[in-house]
Image (cartoon, rainbow, N blue to C red; front, side, top):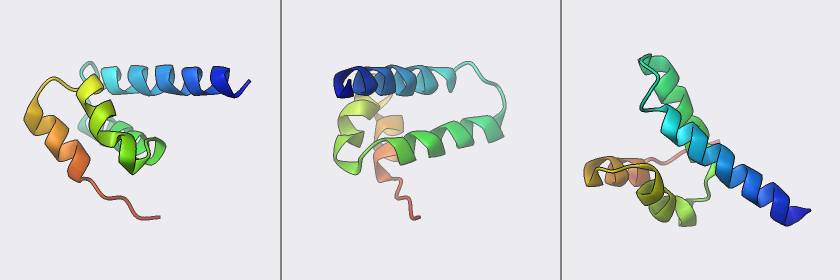
Length: 69
C-alpha cells in the first residue's frame, strides 16, 4: 500500500510541475511552486527539480527556496 501511495504522490508532483508551463496565471504558478516545495523533502529537491525543469537557472532557483512553517 505504501508503494502505491509513493507512486501516486510522485506522479501527482510530476503533473503539478508540468502544469507550471501551461498555466498562464502568475499567482497560480507561485501557488504550484509553493505546493511542490512543501511536498518535496529538501534532500530530494535537487533530483526532482532536474526531473521537472529544463533550465539550470530554474533548477538552481527552485533548490534555493527555503520554506518555513
